[in-house]
Amino acid sequence: MNKLEVLHFPDKRLRKIAKSVEKVDQEIKDIIDQMFFTMYEEKGIGLAATQVNIHKRIIVIDVSENKNEKVCLINPKILLLSEDTDSMEEGCLSVPGFYENVTRPKDIKVSTLNYDGKEIMLETDGLLSTCIQHEIDHLNGKLFVDHISTLKRDRIKKKITKLKKEGTLFSRKDIPNYKSVI
Ligand code: GNR
Ligand code: NI
Image (cartoon, rainbow, N blue to C red; front, top):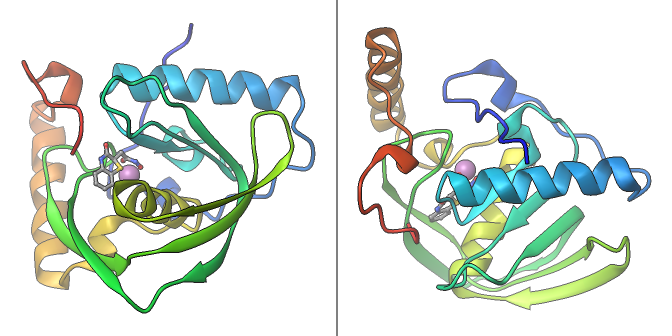
């Protein structure tokens, strides 16, 4: 299986708007399989196609403890965002090593195509809700650092740029005993 390369903030390609998938054919399923492989290898709980430079509306998620509950969303549409909010410390494979609190709507209702190309509805809260919103943001060219202050975002941008130059920007899989969730 092929591991895909994850783009890092402030790469401009993370700002592209992903296009809808027209048909869930074998090519799309191959992309999804490679995205799950990449997500598990990198110890993420979610991955959007945008992050691997594929600008299609595809998301993979697994928020389970045993990493055995694959959730795949194709062309997800948010039908409902609750007034109630929830705050959670977020991280991102495209912003390695940085974590900040983000406040988002607590409950969501989403309609999406699944791996079989069938339309399904998801109603959820908690980590899965946060993760789905984080991933849909990616498809719209948005990152969790856009939800925090400009000052914090610019600091993170500077630090990542410096680490990249030095060649010392590490991904999670290189951190021993990295805990998978968050
Ligand atoms: O691995 C990830 N953890 C995480 C924690 C809190 C909220 C969202 C996430 S998603 C992130 C993986 C990632 O970058 N997905 O785009
Ligand atoms: Ni992310």
